[in-house]
Image 1 (cartoon, each protein chain N blue to C red):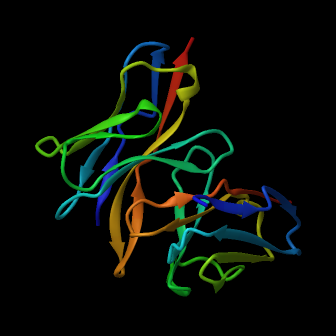
Image 2 (image 1 turned 180 degrees about the horizontal axis):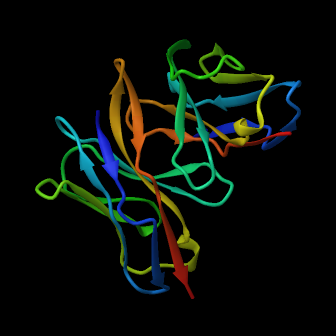
Amino acid sequence: DTEVTQTPKHLVMGMTNKKSLKCEQHMGHRAMYWYKQKAKKPPELMFVYSYEKLSINESVPSRFSPECPNSSLLNLHLHALQPEDSALYLCASTRDYNEQFFGPGTRLTVL
Amino acid sequence: AQSVAQPEDQVNVAEGNPLTVKCTYSVSGNPYLFWYVQYPNRGLQFLLKYITGDNLVKGSYGFEAEFNKSQTSFHLKKPSALVSDSALYFCAVRDLLRGYSTLTFGKGTMLLVSP
């Protein structure tokens, strides 16, 4: 298995909703990342997990809450989002801290 | 901090012609450089990397990149473009953020291959 999977592919939520994004990899990678990407822009780093521990939080608002239940799974819990949070959310993992392998992303729309 | 620059917002090329997408870098120490491609509404796909060794790096889908230390460049190339190569291309460099390995991306270059 050489891929990163993300669910759901699309998500529409209201500003009062609570939802979660899921990312999974079975490549034995010990570092995983969440990115936010706006259209035609580079990905912006949000969080880094290393060995299941949150290592970097790039000043992300608390309405985004990451979780790493085990070495293969990464969640991003969403609550009280704003319309400007609408974006493509990408998950990535790396084996040797060089190239990262990305999932297909979740397209989030906040109404 | 490490950085990469992609000077072109868009590159237009006719199918069958060679293509080049430019990237220059600014790093302290030895650069670890990468190219990714992104098709519409998809994640980033890894194409190739330069860590050390041969300056000409071959990657997926017939792409290659040339590492040039004197010009601090890492341009992506393909001898014969396909319409299906039309996509957004990102150059990236490995960086250390508070001791953890991250990627710093260029702004991206849209490649349009016309039939």
